[in-house]
Length: 172
Image (cartoon, rainbow, N blue to C red; front, side, top):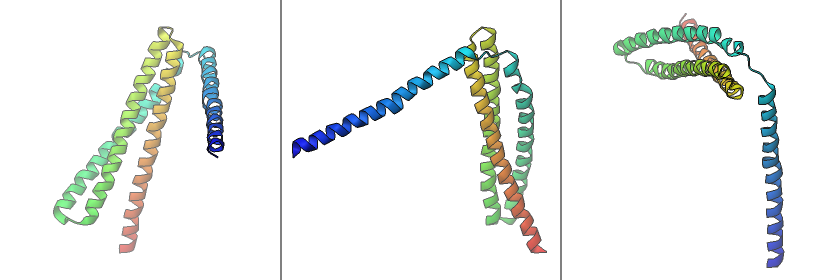
């Protein structure tokens, strides 16, 4: 009986090893080969990373304006809290703290994206195309993260405005 259990266990173990080998190691080797082909065949022109500069610069300006508007709102709520001292103001301040975090995240991801874009340009200048492509892809991913966090912040601010408008409609 113990031999049968040992045989079944070892059969399972070999099956698991074969499964892991085929699906993780073989697939990873195929992925590495395909990315090597991508890096060898894709030529990154120096103009490509420069396309991100106007987009990131304009978004950084918009993010700064959102930050300034949010800071004015926080100052106004702070004054309301000192005079009214209500729980509703405290809840609004907690929501604004998360929105402030999202704005900082947007700005940081945008700044790192533009740095990666600059590094990509330098890599292309020094004929390091695969490194330049890596920096450019990283820049695009960071730029996407910045836009996604901006979208989340916009959705939160829209929800806050809808709550405020519904409070005004109820008071009428």
